Structure formats: structure tokens, C-alpha cells
Image: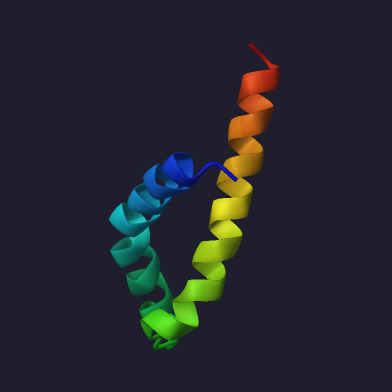
Amino acid sequence: MNQELNMKFMQIAMKHLPEGKELLEKKGMELSMEDIQPMLNLLLKVMNDAYELGKQDQ
């Protein structure tokens, strides 16, 4: 994976993290950053796949 692209994806994810955390807390799930890290890693994979798909469509 491209390191620079991963940093941009991580910035996007962190921008929206408070909203996701709030949604989970409303459902009664309290999460630490340690709990969230595996989900962020999964999100990065999804974003990378979506980026590659977008490149193929050009």
C-alpha cells in the first residue's frame, strides 16, 4: 500500500471518527483507541480497494 495515500486515508478516517464513536456510544458501546485500531485498519483496506477501483474506471 502507498504510504502517502494511507496517511491521507487515515486523516479522512480520523476526521469522521468522532461521529462513528458517537453512534456506537448511543448503542451502549464504549470503545478505546485500542479497540478502534483494528476497525481503522479494515477501513484503510476498504478505502485502498475503492481507490484502486476508481483508478481502473478512468
